[in-house]
Each structure stands twice: as C-alpha cells, then as structure tokens.
Length: 132
Image (cartoon, rainbow, N blue to C red; front, side, top):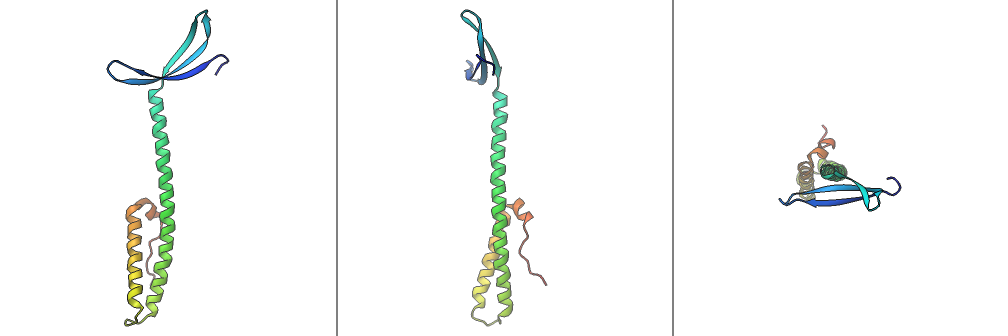
C-alpha cells in the first residue's frame, strides 16, 4: 500500500437480495473534499480462498486419519501375529484356546473396521495375514 492509502472491505447488497464483497482502496485527496477510491469486486476470489482453505483442512484431517489407521494396523499386526503363534503352540483341547480365538476374532474385526473406515489409508498398510 502506498503512503496515505487505506483499504477496506464492504459487503454491498442489491435490492434483489444479492450481495457482493468489494475491496475499496482509498487514496490521497485529489481535490479539497474529494478522494480517489478504487473498488474491486473480490467476491469470487474470496470464495476460492475459502474453498482452498477448507480443502487444506480436509487434507490435513485425512493425513492424520491415515497415520492413525497405519499405527493402529501395526498394533493389530502384532496382536494377531502373537495370537497366531500362541494358537499354534496350543492343543485343540487347551483351556486357553477359546480365549485366544476370541482375541484373534476381535483383532480381525478391528482390522476390517480400519480398512472399511479408511480405505485409502488401509490400502497403504499391510493387512495382517498368516505366512506359510
């Protein structure tokens, strides 16, 4: 801004109910009681700026959710892996086996939930699976 210049935004309402956002730049006096004012309609620019800001916020939330899903999937991989190892060491009639199978079922449900809630994040993560 030049020396002696001021900028203000004004909302201009029309008789039909529409409104526009106008930026006015007021400059030094051109005559004794008259000032130069340059007005620009910035309605569209402001809408684009607001959409960009909203898009950036959504992208940030998506990245955060993807990171959480990735970390959660890593935890599930460890839980399911150790559960699988313990089940392999237990006989079919072992009293601990039903509890371990419940842990395994819950872990698989949690993994399915993660992949359903965050498909793009889950596609980057490794799904827990048994290696033979």
